Image (cartoon, rainbow, N blue to C red; front, top):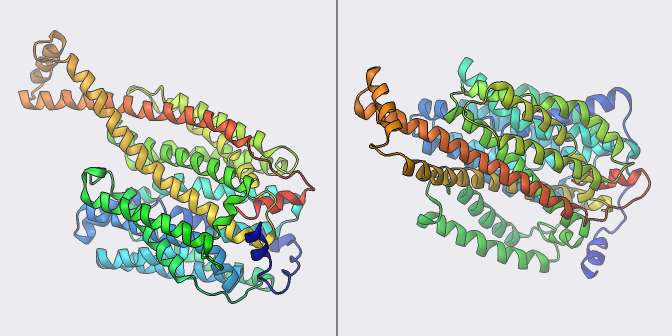
Length: 529
């Protein structure tokens, strides 16, 4: 293909030989530093969610205004992630990663000190911008640290931090807010980030990747900011503003679609694009990225929805809801190393199929939840979900980047992570909206069966009034009971639909053709996630 030829001819000299794998204490310390930096980054996507009421109250703003603390980070992060490939070629992977971590620490410190919402949002934007390159580069550097035959193990270490952190965030954020103060959800990043940056620079400075001066694709960058920013704000604010009933949401949708179409045409015809969309011409990258993104959309949607249902309609506190999600890490930690060792020997499509079947089973079990469900009933599918997580990221990462040359890895890693993160945002918006719509439908059906002339309803109202409630309070309490039932049925509907979607993706993943080569192929495949 002409674009492949042109991109391959850009470096005047071939890429330098890859540095040898790390060994001993350097390998252990490097793995720990990169994993902690990734964990810190992913944690910040969800840790502020449960702290919003405390942040809003402390800064004297409404909770609706306070949601910009989350939106600002998500928009900035979504914009910067796909720029990873271009920034890496310009500045080098090690230099860019270390600087990103240090700036993330500074931004976290300033977020904690922010005296007003406007200043907090400004530093959350900075935090999101510098967080973008950290995730793809942590994986690229981690895979360069291991022998090719052990690339699956490197992927296992990386995937555990990426998937467990979103679940840990609400639990840790709730505990810190309840027991210390909300600024500490940002301050905890400072010692972790400083240590990770120092260790990374000490170990990897001599392993810096080749750089070259590239022209800045200013038009592509502006179009990227326009359509990604519009899309992310639309997804974050859509439910709050009643979606397309709002002129603001309509305007954002028009800007997102128009901006994306112009961006697509420009980047495919630009000699030095800011984002290499030609990667989607590769079968494995396109199919792998699609299945990974849809699966992550469904996974992240359930991670958001379950604690919301537990807190709003089952009487759980934020900490208790976090505890109900925490055991997901048990099987993930136990099985990920085993999957990592086997990914280079077994067909990654078969391993991904195991993950999809596991997620479908877990979501089917959750679709049978009732209002009388106890903690054990809720914990069983949560524990089993950890096993599905172990089979999820590692083989799909191998499929996504199977056969990619080393110089394409940072670009492919940034692009695949961008689609995954965007899909997660879409999943969050979709499941909460569908949940509300299904609950409203169930509420109408139940209300049709209830009337003041109904004997059972009359007895219930009389019993409530006998314990001291006024007629209005008795009706309100009855409506609360109906809401609990309808929102439980609604969450069951979402879980069941998600289970079927996981099953429907199994044939899709088998359309990929991962390269079957020497053990090193796994490293090449995984390194560019």
